[in-house]
Length: 269
Image (cartoon, rainbow, N blue to C red; front, side):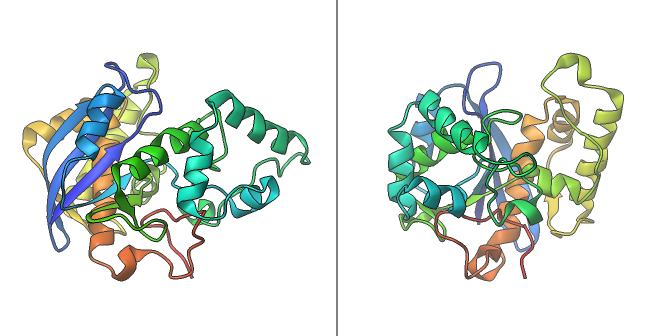
């Protein structure tokens, strides 16, 4: 089974490309075969439009909080919601979300999705630190345009199955230590040691998702030495996709809200 893991950025460039991990899964064993950078939208969109089959986890939020969507009177189906948001300039999206937050009391500024709690993720309407709202804005429109199936949210090509991933969810199952930074000065030995611990647990399969990672020694070394952890994050998303591929409904709750979505690997009752 072909498995994909995508470390996403809302501003792809040569110094910070979208990174896609390609792998093959046999049950709970995942072999990573290559990592491919896409430094601009054109190259990423070209790849995304190619035929499958694959199951992939993408590191950006697929939905918005139901509370937020209902408050704004925005469309209540995923494809219509994505189309509506894609038509808004980034600044207008930010201003809309900021106005929503400004009208709320301290301590409850943002509207959260149900999955944010178990996934430990930031609210998808957050536009700074990290700017996941922009990732939603740029990422979902391209999934829709490419005609992939966004499982539980939108029926498209059944040979290309997109799931929401969050590498931090998989990494925190191994260690709570920080393992990355985009700032060179903060790419410390302690963060490198955390990457070593994460990679070791993945290779041993000694983590809650139970997927055993196989990869070349050269690639393992590159994952450890990449202080930004973009490559490792793509692999962590691939691990989540491999875990989901083994489970009914890809391990997602049957009652998942069709505008909020759910993060692959996040627990639910």
